[in-house]
Length: 68
Image (cartoon, rainbow, N blue to C red):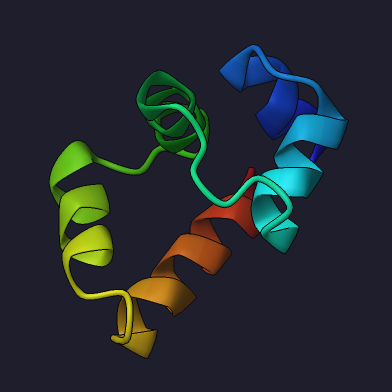
């Protein structure tokens, strides 16, 4: 989590708040920075956001975040 936050240019606390929903609508550029930090292509991010009920996308996001 520390490495992802640092790579995205945000604090660990901000990342934690986004993950737990305490920041329900993070800024667009923050989302892009996090996606870039975990190596998530923008097309995959768009797909995940277009259908948030699809657990496959959620699992893919989690796996990429855990890898970072």
